Image (tube, rainbow, N blue to C red; front, side):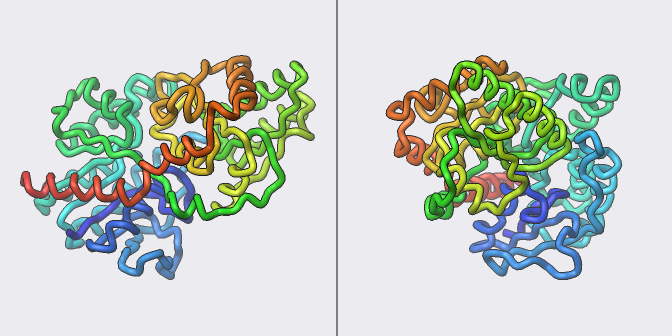
Length: 381
């Protein structure tokens, strides 16, 4: 098969779960298929080296700012990318096109191209927001929700990266045939993560991800303050960067936690895994996750994960509550209780159970499931 994977942000130049998903799937599929990653040319004039030389990187133009100053996605970038992919897809020789649902305009452009070229389109849904658009964007959310619905109707062939998102797609205004929406989760580089050595000083808690408002890292910091008030002084490493960094740093100072909380910024992947293996629990207090790869990566490192209940949070699907971690209410006191419970019960959240659970999500298995989807779509015409 000749497969085009379309997304504006390209790993490893842009770090994130969606970027990593397309990168890893491309590496695996390229062993037996012709795979092209179509996105902004983050790599400049020289095509980046990849783990397998047969992955082709196709630039659709100079990268634009993905986010505005407030951390929200940049609508003008989304429109620009949607227009930029048209020449590449029209002139490309592909058997199937897999376009990321977000930022939507690329789905609409892909739909137009595939109608002309008579090539099947698969849309990979990281999240489905629905009514959340109004919370995220106020009155402008009406426009966001409309464009999202147009993207839903663009193709009968959809992949949801969580059952959580699949069910939301099936219940939306453009109700889908359940047989045309497959769930194929994201995964982990199991063997690579397991090979990393723990070479950092111990810390009880770790967070890794973008420092964005919806990640609610402030909830974690306030939970640490609550634990400190209870006489439980835990150390925490926060890995990542983003528009919330200054506010979170000030909050840490205000709550007199500067000696307990260490902001690491972005770190190399192997260092992140090494830090995880030096921790006792990973906390992800996010209110919105399309999947939550970091939960599986933490389990792969042998530590449990704590996530919070939220109507927009698919990461709770990944936690076997009371076995590989805990799912708690989205309050700092509940998060503090969960942290203390996990740290005080090391025999319940055993390392070998977490590792065994994560092994089911190895990228090789995930990529095989995507091949099954593509072959099914092609065979059904």
